[in-house]
Amino acid sequence: MKRKLFLLIKLLIISPLGYAQINMEDSTVQVIAYWDLGEITSYSMVLENITVNGEDTTFHGTTSYLVDMEILDSTDVEYTVKWTYRDLQNSFGPGNESLEEVANRARDIEGGDVVIFKTNNLGTFKTLVNWEQIRDYYDKVREQLLVDFDTLPNVNQLVDSMYGANQTQSQVQLSSTKDVFQFLNYHGAKLRLNEPLTGKMKLPGLYDRGLVDGDFFVELEEIFEEDNDFRLVSFVEADAEQLVAQTRELLKAFIPDSSDDDIDTLMLQAGEITNTREDVTVMHGWGWPIYSQQVRRTTGNGVVNWEIRTIEIL
Image (spheres, rainbow, N blue to C red):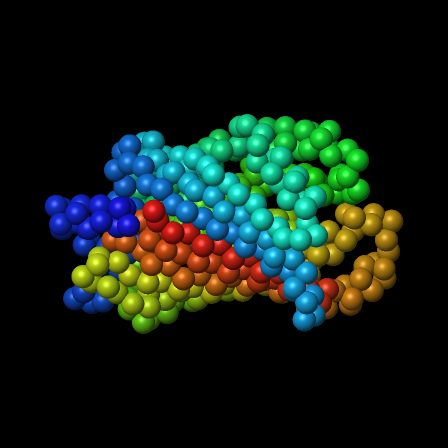
C-alpha cells in the first residue's frame, strides 16, 4: 500500500512523464522502464508447483520470497539492475519432508541471494551480469548437499536435477532468471487496446534443456487512465515437435544403451507432450509491474505439471 501511495504522489509531481506510456488519443501504450538511479522497489513473489497424475494431486509445493530491486546504473541506452532475494520460505506438504529439508539447507548456504542483470533503455532483458558467481554458488550448494544428505536415497539424482545443469552462461541464465523474465515480459512492447498481436518467439522447453520455438499471443486488455496503469495478457505455446526431440534427447542421456526402438516405446508411453504459458500483468505507467501472475503448464507421461508464479508490488 505504501508503494502504491508513493507511485500516486510521484505521478502527481511529474505527470507528463508518468503518462508517457499511455496515449488515450489512439488507445495505445508502450511499456517503457522509467526507473531512477538508486531507486529500490520491493516485491513479494510466490511460486506454486503442482503435479496432477490422473485425478490425483501428487504434489503441491509453495515457495515464497521477497525481492528488493535496485537500479545500480542508468544510461541513455541501458539499466543495470540488482535483485536481492530474502525471507525465502518453502512448504512442500506431507510426504515431502526430505525434499523440503534439502531445499531449506540450500537456502541457508550463503552466496546465492543476488542476481544482477542489464536491460536496454526500454527495460527489455539483455544479459545476466553475475552468471559466473551464480554458477559457482550452484556448484557449492551441490557439493554441500551431497555431503549433508549422503544417506538420503537417490540424493545424487535429486541434487543433479536441482543444480546439475548450470555450467554455461545460457544454462545459468535459463535456470536463475525465470522471475526476472516474467517481470520484464512486456517491456519494449507497443500495443493498441483490444488489438492482439501474434508471432514467433523463443521460450524455455521442458526440463530446462534449452530454448524452443513458440507461437505467442499478446493483448492490451484494458487501460485504467486515472490510475496510470493498464492490464496486459499473453499466451505462448511451445512447438510440439521440438518438445518431443528434447524428450528423446533426455531419455537417451538417462539410458545411454537404449536403442531407437526402446526410445520409441518410451515416447509412446509418454503420450502428448505440451508446454504452454499464460500471463496476466497490471503495469504502472513507469514500467513497474503492480501485479503479475504467470501459469506454465506442461504435460507428458499422463502427468500435468503446473508452475504458477505471482509477483506483487509491496
